[in-house]
Length: 113
Image (cartoon, rainbow, N blue to C red; front, side):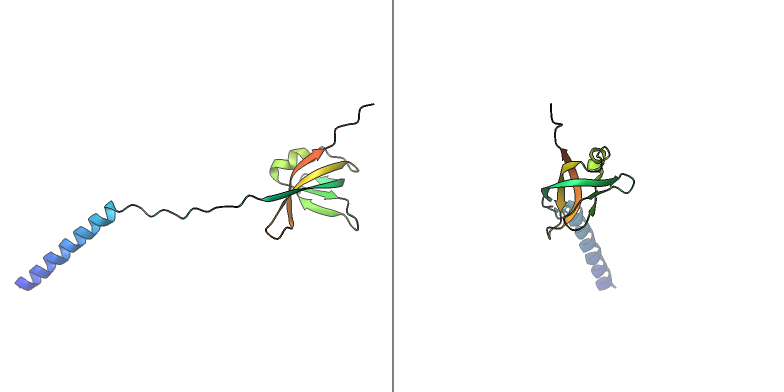
C-alpha cells in the first residue's frame, strides 16, 4: 500500500511540474510567410471594350482580341475608357510570367492644339 501511495505521489508531482513548465514555456511562433512582390510590366494596348460588371477589359491583339481581369483597385480607372483609346496597362504576372490581372492604367495626355 505504501508503494502504491508513493507511486501516486510521484506521478502527481511529475504532472504538476510538467504543467508548470508548459505555462512558463514561450508560446510557439507561427512561421512567418514571406510573399514575393508581384511581378508587373506595362503593355501598350488599344481598348476594344470594358465590362465594369464582370471586371474585365478587352484589348486589341495582333491576331485576336484578349479579355483580361481588372483588379478592384484599377476598376475605377478603366470605367471611363472608350473603344479605340490607346492606353498603357500595368499587368500583374504569376510565377510563370503569365498575365493575371490589370492593376493600373496610364492614359496619354490629350494633345494640345
